[in-house]
Image (tube, rainbow, N blue to C red; front, side):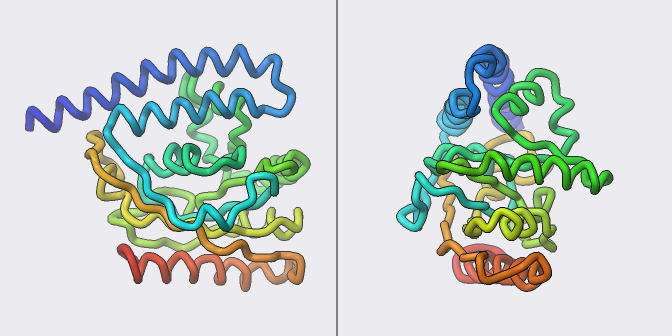
Length: 242
């Protein structure tokens, strides 16, 4: 009990310190970065520190399938708050994460994340969300890519939930390849509603890019199911699925 409380306090305090220091730096440097690459680089440092401090290692398969100079729409499952920092550290492509609007309201973190080009959307306001996503398409070039956690929220126990269409719709509109990403076991280190981050190894699988050029927006359900099927297959083979 004491160990758990101590580790939870350690994770919370170090995260707050990193956010205060690097978040402030992001706000400043973003004033001089037109592309957003510099703030994002500081964001990756923040992510690396979170993982390193909590003794979390990340093993990733399939990175050779991704060209760092090409833009993609990455779509993955989501079972832990460790997922965003882990993928930010391991993927070389500058990412535009799509996050829920409630995160934007967190003091300093929300401001810094917005400066690092995190795209916050309000799922209860579809027109506004669509407008923000359409605006984001203009910035997806020269390796800058979008990243969607397709379930919209973290699952419990690594169970795969229904997927939302936003990532697929953006990919079809932008005619960008979709790369399925599977988080296998991050929920074992930092499950939903937990305060303590357990030390250990996260495993991630990068799938083959899916060419979207043969499809139209009317094919979004078909493409969405294809992406989900790949992630589900990986979970069934290597991890936990529903």
